[in-house]
Amino acid sequence: HCEQLSSGWTAIATPIMDRHNDGITVYANNNNGNITLSDDGYIIGDLLADGMSFKGKNRKILLENLLLSYGAKNEDNVITMKTTEEHYAMSFHMFMQALLAINDMFFLNSPNVKTIFLEDVSDYLEENNIIYTSNFLARGSTGIEFKFDFQIAGRTSEILISSFNSINRQNLSSFLFDWLDIKEERIRQAKKDVSGLAIINDIEKPVDQQFLNALSAKGTE
Image (tube, rainbow, N blue to C red; front, top):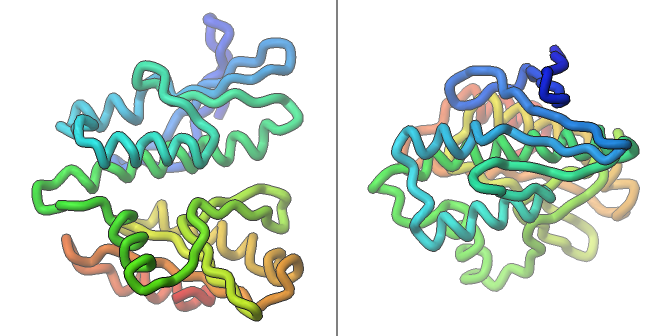
């Protein structure tokens, strides 16, 4: 649902849910074909209101890396992205993925989480001398670019990996959509067997079996 505001911005109410199961609203401003997308400070403001801190070095780095990998910026705790009419659809998709990824940082807000799970996965790969590419971008069959945390490329096979500090219906659905859209296109482009892998933190709480079943049903592990 879109609503034109008196300020000249358009409020776009999406069906994509945040961690409160509320639909995320994005604000867009079109200035002669140059479009600015904004969350109006909602995502980071909500995290701060619930006691999340970004003072730690690791969390600052994670936030910066997430923004960079999706092409977004943090302007005084307002997440923004610049785009054009030509690239609007792809940019809107990437902007929503950035909001979801930052929204998911709430699950780091626990004294029991001593390291960021993404770093744990990266450390594991390096300790086992596995050569990988981080923040791997690839274009799917719809023409939209998707980001995976890691890509492991072999001579005849390729693994696309996403890590989850906490798995829920929203980020599971997002991952499966990305995977299904990219799978056949990557097989065609890379001419390799391509598999998807979700690495999930189950230390804080067990993973719901129905989520694992959904991953398996769609050909991922």
